[in-house]
Amino acid sequence: MYKRQLPANLTRRGATPGRWSPHAWSWDAGSPGDLPELRTGGVRVADEGSQLVTLALLAAPLEPPATTGTGQRWLDLCAGPGGKSALLSALARPAGATGVSVELRPQRSAMVADAVAGAQAWWQVRTEDGREIGDAEPAGYDRVLADVPCTGLGALRRRPEARWRRSPADLTTLGPLQRELLTGALRACRPGGVVAYVTCSPHVAETRVVVEDVVKAGERGRSVPSEVLDARQFVTDRDGATLPDLGQGPYVQLWPHRHGTDAMFLALLRRR
Image (cartoon, one colour):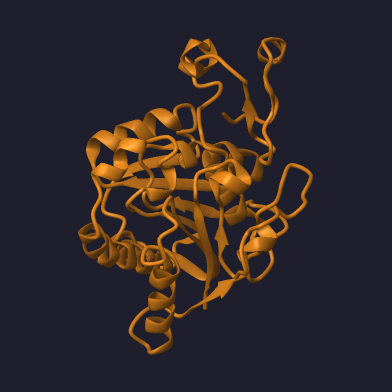
């Protein structure tokens, strides 16, 4: 659940700071649905790993360096159901940035709109194909989040039944889509801007293999040229310290048994 400063009435009910994210708060027991603040949008339920990868996108430097977000445009390319968009839109306002959330399916797009309710003055929700926005708005954004559709194997602790709905054939279907979405994100990102490629799956076929294929395509002139940043330095706790056990880099892999989060994968790329 995220909110940087939690209302006093929630702290009196036993809310404590999350383990890592400065925007995370938790309870040892109880149902979040019982909180009136959840129904009114004052707080939202979100995995702490999702918060960490979103914050890493905002922490990575732009070229040329930017001291604030003023004038920046941010994009959430695969926004449904809206948790990361809610966090991005909340942080955009004080930074002076504006943003757009894109979601293909109307039902999920409506969920995103609900998640960012109240931010319409600086945050837009559009029902579009994320693969096409880079052609419609080439180099139009400073920061792009591409939390792509995946097998969801990193979230089995919360959705254990998903293991019976997945098969190796899913990788064949999802792989091309993931590459297309990452390529679209790079097209939408301006030179010197940053793209975060995120999955809630630790499977290498959905993570580093996708990133490496897209980067190689750029090197060969068949796609957008980009470079991979070392994402580990941007995944930090509420005190600014780098999280332990993030892997050998340049990618970040979070784990339930090490970090208490979903098994989120993060790659940060800078468009050249």
